[in-house]
Image (cartoon, rainbow, N blue to C red; front, side, top):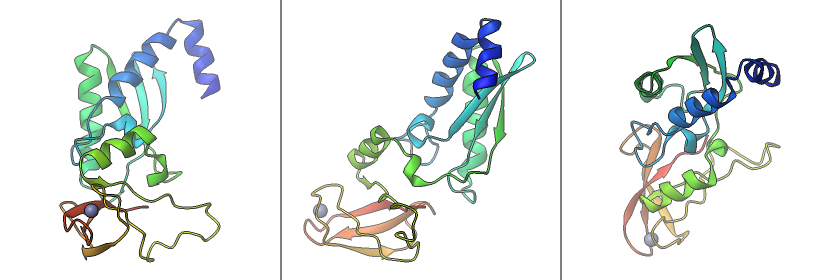
Length: 174
Ligand SMILES: [Zn+2]
């Protein structure tokens, strides 16, 4: 990344790469809509590749059918601004919900979707199968119960708040 930046600076391409990053990050997630690619933290790197720009994108849930849609949307958005972009799918390191930015978490909560709990320190503190403590996005009560492991999309689970009685989606943590 540092090496690529240095080369771009020599040919005056830093501003262009920054522009393209902004364009790519503003692409909304096709499933969640309320958050964009920047909020999800999935753009890992950008570099010049001849006349084109290669954008490294790590998919959120690799089984998520939205993956291809996001990649196409990024290429289309950048092309619309007159740049040629190619998305390179980067699978390692794998995306985790910890990459979602604080702004992204706030947008999810505002949309009534409980943001994923932090995964912990990675020392075995997180158990994928453990029941997470999920706070209601409306009233912040922790008195919630899972209705269905699969909500509107495979990335979300359906919960119900036992305090305000509202059902809501929980963005499953990964
Ligand atoms: Zn509630």
